[in-house]
Amino acid sequence: MTSEGSSDRVMVETGGEAFVEMMNSNGVDYLFINSGTDTFPIQEGIAKLRHQGRPTPEVILCPDEGTAIAAAHGYFNVTRKPQVVLVHVDAGTMQLGGGMHNAQRGRAGIVLCAGRAPMTFDGEMTGGKSMNIHWIQEQLDQAGALRNFTKWDYELRRTENIQHIMQRAFQVAGSEPTGTVYMMLPREVLMERMDGMAPISASRHGAPTTPHADPQALQGAAQALADAQHPLIITGYSGRHQSTVAAMVELADIIGAPVVSDRVHMNFPSTHPMYAAPRSPTYRTPT
Image 1 (tube, rainbow, N blue to C red):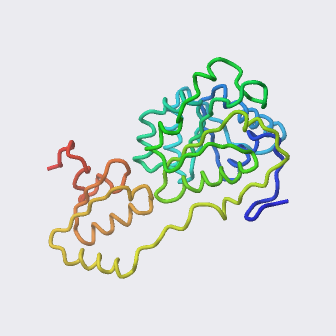
Image 2 (spheres, rainbow, N blue to C red):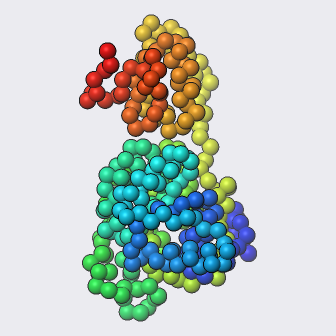
Image 3 (tube, rainbow, N blue to C red):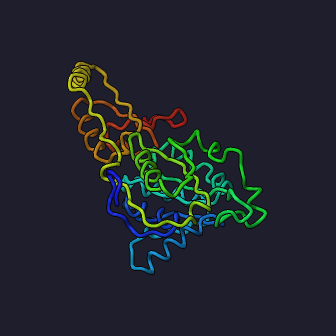
């Protein structure tokens, strides 16, 4: 049985294993993790699938959450594929600190996942509260701590739609302008029993095609540059797509325009004769 737009069913027995298979479905190479009491169902899922000879992302154990998000940010810049970070509940979320600011500023496509304090406590479900810290870690709005820095946040509530929610997370993170999404994963959901899952097709439900500029608008811009006596190019985030750098160099050479570049991405080579300055008042313009 498959749902519309889904691949063939894969055998998974828990929500944690389904999470791993959705990473596989989206071509995730590495899982950057700083673990805690709520992440072990995913770690156990990886261990089980590996024992069965099935593919899993390579686990990169990070000594600090800041290391995890910085590594994911860097690998996204290289691959342009959304990366996955897994941290521990509210404490791990808060420890991300300035890394979230950097990810937002750098338009880093990251599926940032954190545990959530277990919801049950009297044996109603597997994975419920089992130590006093689980009460202390229950926050009124855990996602609110990062909402200003993310494109989307969501709490996984059911195993029946885990493939839909996970694919939506990858789709939002990878759509232009790319950015970080935040998902909370209750331990009970990750440990809930499942009888297989049909992954959503990443090729069908991936990032949408980027809109193209209107030809007439481009012609008008070209004419304005051709007529300009003292053209100046100011770049922002164009260098996040490496193919734009050579085109920017060619344009500057043709029209003789100095280029002022933002420092977040390498939009224009600083060794080029037309390089003017970083776009910041704190930097002195080269003489």
